[in-house]
Length: 71
Length: 304
Image 1 (spheres, rainbow over the protein chains, first blue to last red):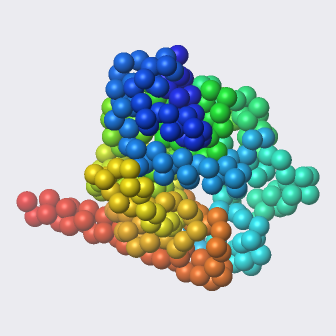
Image 2: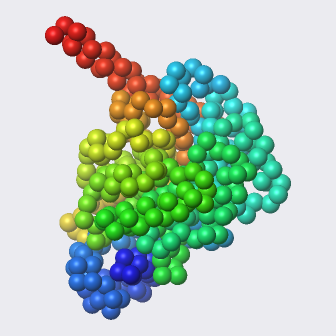
């Protein structure tokens, strides 16, 4: 369950700008609110912030181009 | 066919794109294999599906999935496995492949390939999904290392250790994307040769080549790298990728399928064929270096 919750949390901050802003302002609390473990919360507090923004921008461009089909 | 000149049986080709179709079909004396994107075939109208079947009768094909997302805690979707099984049954490819990524979670479509945390738990989850895929399709997929712009959080091991763990726990061999390796090793500061040394070369079954470009990092992390390589498949294969292909050739003795991926900004087919020739030469140099090294070792042993 925890890995599924972690993947869902990552998917949210990778795709939702507002969620990402809230997370970057307070990573540990946002992760805890999502039900993640202490270790996962600590890991997310150390997240690669520049990489998060770059990946999120890249994913957004891909979604706009429809690279991964939703069929 | 070009492959006949290759004693080991390496095959070289392109990802199938409508923009390249005429050029590829006119160059089948220099193209040994074509990679078909699975999701392009899923919803294709009957005429396009017939065209793919015709293609598969003219040249060896391999099928490459981009949307299954097997490196996930969530089970892969049955309808996607069924569609893959139909396509594989239709085209009878030499193999099929997918990415070591998750692409959706919690009802959210990420839109592209995301790197999961590199942990024992995600190795086990990927192994379970790859086994489900093997049962549904009838053959295990080759699995591809992905490019990532973010160092995946909550990881407890290196990318090489994680991939080696998946290979050790599944029947899947590796589709080694050398531009992804080049990009990740550059962006996150590790040695790509050490990565190759951590992977059993007998488990490398295919190679992807591509190009990318530098993008600037946002200024929110002053301590991090100021720019990173984006794997965009829109540019020529850069020299470090050919060097990595040569290094693979020096390590790997099994026949390899080498695919050049190009998703846009298409140059003339002659330019792409020239890139394929550079790839043939790089792999041959690596193979030759390995043969020379083995022969030298034999002579040393005989003298001793």
